[in-house]
Length: 518
Image (cartoon, rainbow, N blue to C red; front, side, top):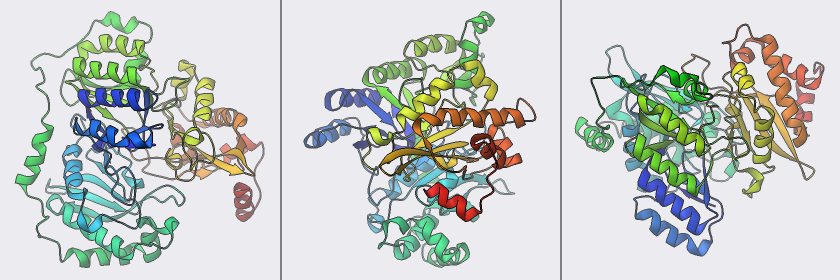
């Protein structure tokens, strides 16, 4: 498998056409967009990788920071630069971090992989709480911009929500403070055990207060040093992200008759998003059509999407960590036209934020690390809930699937999470509820890890289990606007467990844990 880096998820139409060409020439004519906003090719021949890298370089792309004990691709909000609730354009800060981290001589071989996420808006659309370092843009009482810094988050074998190590870090000190954190981690991080090498384990073992003291002590040698950011440096990077020449003076509207066209209103409700410029919208192209592996896109579709980006969004598109593609700058009067073209390409499923917008890793179909297959489970759930009217009645719900404990499908932070496990050589699936990736526009709870319901299930049982969870939610919600995660937060996991297993689980916590591990 070869990962292609898409720094902070931003692509040009030219680059997407090159990816389509590479997938067709060197692979099996499709690619998989991952939760790190990169593209994975599953079948390249090893001897052809140099040719692939040369092709990527021709459009200023590469495969750096996609694997190994290094900085991985910094991820961010896919609505950066256009979101109405934005504090800073997070693309600028991600690029600053990319230039700082790439080939950094001191951190070229860390104890383990290192992931950073940046959120520049009021609502967290980057899941900053489950990264080694999470940065959330904030303003202090004097309206000065800075960052809330979280450290020690991560999923995988030991899922942990990051802890705030600094409530407000003035932006000029961003790189020096991060370098202090990395120096402490590089010095004390475990290298003797791959399962205990992430910074989250260091935070847990040393304690946040001790770690904070060590970081502050290290920072004394770095603060106000050469890596201190200046307005000139930030402006230099910002010039790379100048926004398009939007048309002004009139709001772009379309005929009211368009709302009566079957399917358009549903798509507009779920896949069209607010834009900071009047008359424009951001549009999500769903890669979650029923029957298609979540996040997969064919070479032909890539070429067609590149054409859409040229015609409707100034030749630019973004990859979300939810494995969809976004056209960020669409004139509102052109939305019906875009919808018709996207629907013909199978990219207009109106399910963004709904149960069938499943986040999933490739699982056992492609990954040698997986314990179980993910794609067939995702498809079975999508087919069970293929009724759009029912989906809209259920409302906002995140369902995530991982094929192993590495949690590439982020199952820990799904409102419903599914984990493939191996039991005596057979594939089984553990289900948990109550996870959350971060605060959203509905004002929901912050990042949280789901709780395991109980013993695992055979693959054929999983859709039935999900249906019972949905039934429990609908029975207990107070109103049509109360979301699944809100109900779990209010009533706890026990009613969902009883709905699935048929009776209360009165075993001791240790007996319940033994049953889960079995």
